[in-house]
Every structure is written in C-alpha cells, then in structure tokens.
Length: 471
Image (cartoon, helix red, strand yellow):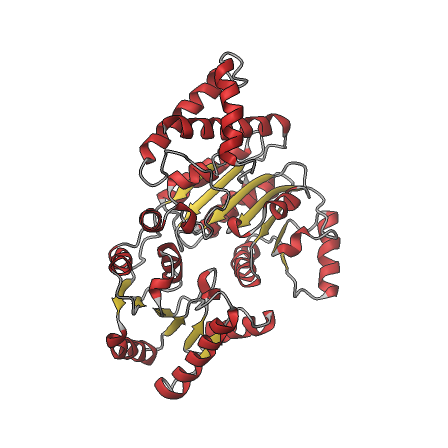
C-alpha cells in the first residue's frame, strides 16, 4: 500500500522537477507601488488565510522557475483578491496578465469586480468572450499586442489565434478543472513560460489533491471573511413543502430574493428543461402569483442567460428557477434562500457549492434541501450539510460516501488505479509516502544511486497512470 503511493508521488515529483529544469521564466517583483496602493484602497482586512496564500504566491514568482500553484478555497473565501495581488505583481514588473474563466457569467463577474478595483488604481482592464462585438475585439487585440492593455479577462476566447500578448507574465485560470489540458496549455503558450495560478472553489480532499495535482503546489484558503453568518441548512421532505413556501414568502416580503434549483433529472437535457419550465410556470401561476419569477437553464442563449441573471441581480425578479447553471459564479448578495429540489441527486460538494450562492450579504440566509428519498444513506448525506459549513470536511465526507471517482464527477478522471491502497482509508499513509518521495528527490534528483528503485518507478508509474498524464 505504502509503495503504491510512494511510487506515484515519486513519479509526480520527478516530473515536476524535469519541467522546472526545462522551463526558465522572468522573476516578478513581489513588492512595489501597485500592490501597496491596492492594499490601501481595499475596503476590508485580508484574513490570515488569504495573507498566507498571498505569501506562498509571492515567494513562487520571485524565482526563475514558473509558478504552478493551485489555490483551493470555499465559496466566498476571497480567492479573487489573492489573484489580484499576483496580477499586480506581474503588471508592476512590466508584464501582462490573463484571467480565464469557464463561463461568460463567471468571466463577466470577475471583470466587474476587477474594474471596480482597477479604476481606483488607474489601470485598464478588458473583457473578451464569445459575445464581444467585432469592433471591440479588434481594439482589444491591438491594445494587447502593443502592451498598453495590462490585463485581459475572458472565456475560451482568450486562447484563439488573434489574441497575441506583447509580454504575458502571468496566467490565472479559474475553476481550472472545467478546462481541458490543451486549453490551459494554449493560454500558457501565449507567453514565454508565464507563471500559472489556478483557482477552484470546489475543495477536494487533500489526498485527492496530492494524487491528482501531485506536481502542483497546493494552497488552501480555509477561513471565511469575518461577519459572514452560517447559512441555516435544513433537510425537508415533501410534507414540509408548505413550510418552505412560507419561509420564501416571508423573505421576499422583506425585500430579499430566492433561488429554486432543479437537478438534471435525466442525462437527456430535454427532461431537465421541461422540469425547469414546468416548475417555473407552477411557481409563477399557482404558488407565488404576487411575485415575479425568473427562469435560467443551460439551453438558453448567452443573451437570454445574461438577461435572466441581470434581472435577478437588479431585483426585477424575486425568485429565480434554475438548473445547476447557477452553481458557479452568480453573485447576488441580496439572495437569502436557496431551495434545492431532489437534493439527494446531487453530490455533497455540489450541494455545498449551490448553498454558497446565498449568505453573501449580512442577512441570515437559508438553504432548504428537498428530498423524497427514503434511503438511509441519502438522509445521512444531507445531515452532513445540515451540520457543517466547511467545504473541505464536506468533500472528505463526499469521498467517503461516493468514492473518489464520483466526487470528481467522472468515475475515472485520470485517477490512478491502486491495487491495495485506498484514497479514502489510507490518507496518513499517502502523506508519509509523499514526504518519503520528497526526501528521495532531494537526496538524488536523478535517482541514479538507487538503480532498482529507478527501474521499479518506471514500471510502476507507467502502470499506475495507465499511460495518462494527470494534470
């Protein structure tokens, strides 16, 4: 068991070392006027965890080896602020930066936030997505190639050919697991071995992080900003529906807003769509005729989605019926209730993500988990959410209930096949194996001293990885 983990970690660390020897980049200045000014205009104090992760990043970027760091942090833990410090370090060192997000909604949200900060620092920033008009595109392309545009935020549009940076020094990728390896690599190739910072709000257990991202440095923001109230979470059955509707009515009457989320009922999106539309009509006509109900689902065009979200953002609609499109990045601080239908069909980490869409303002927020499942494990799983707000703990429990492959959303997802070791049960063994592997690489990076170990590594690593490269 130990040796399975040991050879996996040894292989990952060796691969990271080879990459580092091949890639040389320009170090960035970790201190300077821009960063100082940013700290002065920030309207809040950074948490200890944010400060710690910023220090990790600033240490990485001072070296000629390109940074390759993953920042994991719960919804609302303040990952964007951490990324901004890295972006400013690149800009004050004379480089450009790019921030890529998986959806237009998320890219636009990052852009809004960055514009509000960058205006105070008198720095330009632009947004490039599939819906950017041709004339605007040309202007962005021109300003990028001359270097007068220091930061570009966008979706996959950033990796298209016409996008040429004059001097790209830092790439930030949000929700990186939603991009393919090729897409991430293409963005990096637009610079000369730029530093790379990846972020995810889907905390995965440390054992999975070490196995999947063993050749990345991993930082965790494990602390929420002060003043956030825990979200009151309750598992309900069909008999409690009236209670749920009463709470919604009370909250909306006080000027607050509500999400109602439905799962993908079936692999075929048609069913998912039908249920969302039906639920929307039912709520609007039968249950809440006095309020305005909105609808958001994956089959809508970008323009329709944007419209639905901005109506909700501006409180023109009080209740938003949605499929899991809202899971990532819809940020409406006024929303205080999240009602999730068929909650037993979601993974715990996904439920936790959805729950994180509320509780962003100062008001008490509520998450209602509707489930008709009689199964004991379904009840136990929902109980975890009632009792905990800690994304890392919830992802550990999710892994125990569903196994590592399911947690990542695919059964295999590049996870190595262990004959004896278990990622769920043997976490301490994995930590020990990682430490032992680090020592070996330190003593002799080539492993020439230990020929048997070197041969065994080649054989095992290939077999464990099934020939696939993980990250």
